[in-house]
Length: 162
Image (cartoon, rainbow, N blue to C red; front, top):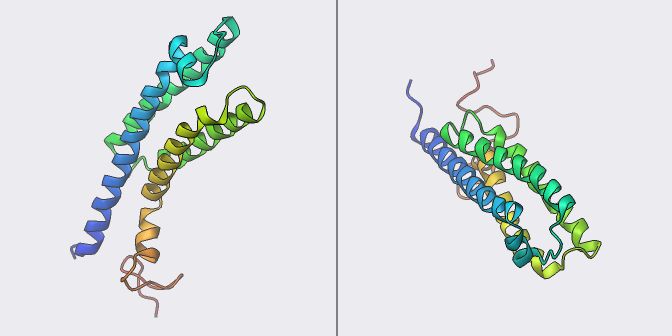
């Protein structure tokens, strides 16, 4: 028996959402490498005046991880449903980056106005990754105008219990 149109449409939507999230994340990460590798850009964005040895050392570590995550997102883009777990992992990475940025603002290293655009972008990315990853659940239980299936209830993928 062929899958019904709603199931096929839901899969297509999820593939599209995951690809959008992975591509947006990869592009964002690629751009994030620029201030990490070029101190004058970091000075412009964050106001760092002393990109000495410790700064370059720490940013070198960060840049290698950022570049690797960019590659991981590109890899996930190629087979989004099979690699959807990368979206969930990316949410934790974004939380970690935001926590580090909050600590920098609280300690006075970076003014809040310099971080606000980054936080806005991170909020958008979090929404993209979370929506794409959880799409099957959102579609099943949260789509307005569609009959909700009861939790633990029978749907088209579970066998009838008699």
